[in-house]
Image (cartoon, rainbow, N blue to C red):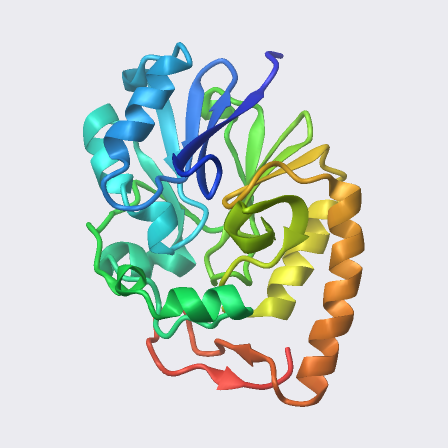
Length: 261
């Protein structure tokens, strides 16, 4: 069995928005950044000694435009098929994240005012529709796609047999990675309590590191401690009816409701 290696490929700043190269017998790319990043990801893959035409699969962790914005461009450049969860097929097929965004704090509220968050990007048609846990062995890496709903309905993570977890937006570094090593929420969650449950399910698999969409890799013990505090905070908000969450079916574009998780 070949060793599986995780390589961060930032597309904004040093680590504000990350994509990842998962290397085993072949190469898999996780996430595709914001619009216009396809060539940058392609070139970073080549800089790490991999022929971009040899990419076996592009895995999208969820349907936000900073994670699938260049998926179709990268597909054209490499010929690699794209995998995405069926519950986020709406955003993928329309090129629009579900509206409205549900901010998790000040950063999300500020970002929600930016026009860049509300653009329509190039649509992507996943060649591989993920519905449940899925092995990536046939794509040349000893890893699994794991459904981790909550951030969005169709959020997924990738965990290697060696224990590296590519976690998408299950958790982030503070302020979009500006404060590294400190676990925090990403700017938005559709269902914060469901996301936290997914995070705990992944932590139960005892990952060695969490490689996140925003910031540097996180220590799992530190994430566990943060998750305990975060659950207490969220439960208090839910008890007061102040915890927004999206409750409509994934294909719906209705307004979110506010209530307990």
